[in-house]
Length: 170
Image (cartoon, rainbow, N blue to C red; front, side, top):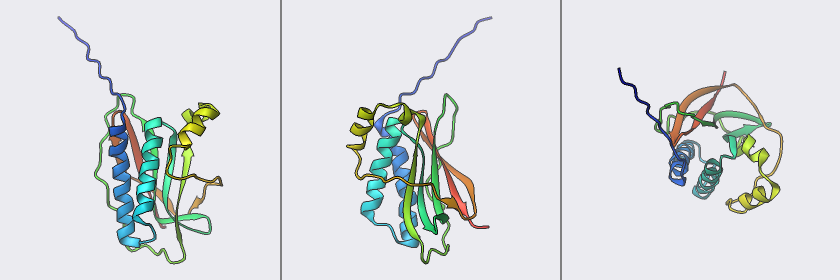
């Protein structure tokens, strides 16, 4: 009887980060087509920012969508970063943003939370990283959700993934 071992190793690269960032940008373009309120320039900035955060491993969650009274409403998308640790996860196609939500009186915005890797970085590392970003984020409390979150897509590459959840109305 013979035995053998297979070792699989993945190195996460900027190409992997761009792959996932492009899928998020495609989701944002779909929101733009259905609801307006977001420019091509802002989508490009969000994509560039997310690519940097994914590559560095500094993002925990990032949410893009519409708010009324500090509550996320439909259509809002939240992406949660994960290390796959050898697990195989699907790499879905972007899209399937539901049309027809009422966004009258809502504003489009984004909210990002940092990973534990960010918390462990030195101030000099954080300052250097933020200097590479297309814009600066402010601070504030995370908005609540009007409705519930539904996990609906996963984007993955190079041993990392972004799980997408969409706000749904009750």
